[in-house]
Image 1 (cartoon, rainbow, N blue to C red):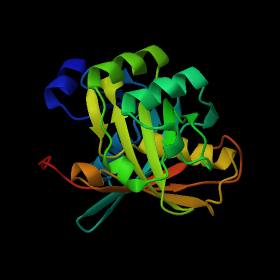
Image 2 (spheres, rainbow, N blue to C red; image 1 turned 30 degrees about the horizontal axis):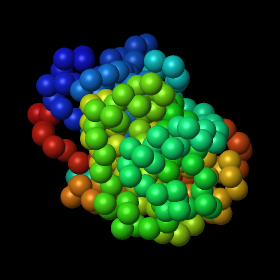
Image 3 (cartoon, rainbow, N blue to C red; image 1 turned 180 degrees about the vertical axis):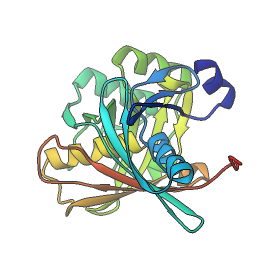
Length: 247
């Protein structure tokens, strides 16, 4: 599976096998296996709906059991996942300083309304909120340095975000631990961010929209629904498209 993922070269490849009444799922980036990948789960839900019809599919991951609902409406494919439980904690000062240096972000560029945090929803993501959308567009970093940092601190992605409003966010998600410069969509980070916003009392109104991939030329949109219960699963929805016909 690791070899196949490296050959394909996508940020993650999902491998699913039927197991009793559920699916055993593993996710591989080109250089590493990850315990959970949201956008690959959305794609898997759409693929299962394409093959088996609309439905809710139970997925057994390495460290969690979740569900994904796949739908097909005409030629349109979409899916909604229920993430693993969420949690968050403040980013330590030394870790934050190293992250800001990696991305060449000045401290005063951070949005103080969303403090730096390690947010979790199946994997840890370092959330850095920026006041200026242009600074998000200018993001760059050294992949090797980012990989070493992420491996040492077990950071799934660096979740750089900009709040356009209470319910609309722009995001970029470097994924150096997997050997990937940047994800065009990151459902796991979307769930982690939504859980973190709930933790800090952000006025999310029950849902947020995350726009990602625009600066890569491959825009995506993820929709995260947030209940009021601390730590509860986040529903993340997105559309999918066929890159290659399975038939």
